Length: 90
Image (cartoon, rainbow, N blue to C red; front, side, top):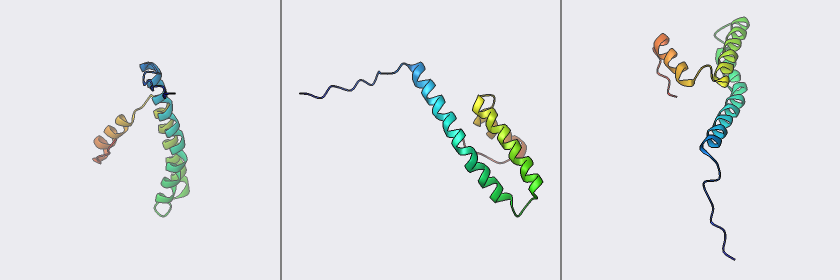
């Protein structure tokens, strides 16, 4: 018996967009603890514990804004470029 031909039109465009959005949110949620750990290790010898706590609180707030769609990666990169003069690739 011949193998049935695979139909690549199993999802509507809206379904694909939704799945992509959900996958992006999952990736953000998984990256937050890793990013926080990297931030703490990078700052350990440079700033005190209270400053690190403040920075992590700000970072969590930014991640929440990105996760909800209030803020985009592009917005963050543009803000960094304007205010710090550092080019960030998104």
